[in-house]
Image (tube, rainbow, N blue to C red; front, top):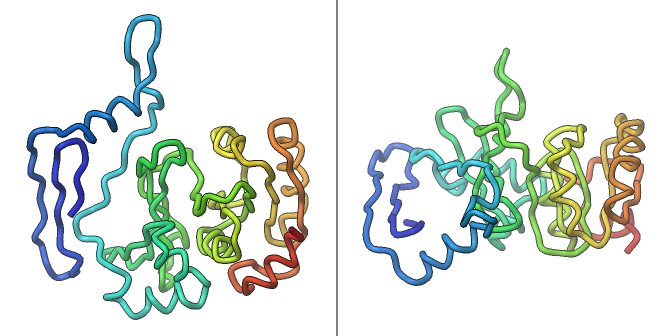
Length: 235
């Protein structure tokens, strides 16, 4: 169960269970404060602070603990520490057979998207799928040093090493991503070794906004342990 602005949302994690729903009720002081924090005061009154729509997780998503393959994927790719620390929310989509990393806006924690990694290759289906097509990266952690990687699993592995993991969900730096990275003291670009040119282009785009460095990788960070990642980053 969860509560959002006076509305209680509930659903069962079992994939075979269809119990779910919403119950609306009066708002308390915390609900009102949450609404106020998501608005900005303009010359003509309150206006939305950001127009990224909220993504409501489908009711049929289940816990990764109920799916052996999903749990194995997270364990193999060093994601379980971030999951158990509740640094991010990871669910399982039984309809599309995907591990889903929920994407939250760093400024207010609003869930704006989900990135699903398919567990078994299906012809014609992409390895990664965005559920809400938002222009926002997957961010896990609150450290002032961000490590920019390609996929969500690598970002979780980076979190376990003590940094903030930022997944681009690819190798392209969207303009909307830059504003999400400005709040960090330092950023380290750590893309796969076949994306070296894109790392350099990304450095040029980010350097006017944040203290940024490049690390050319020999191994994918999601397969590295904590000490290996710390040695790569160097701080």
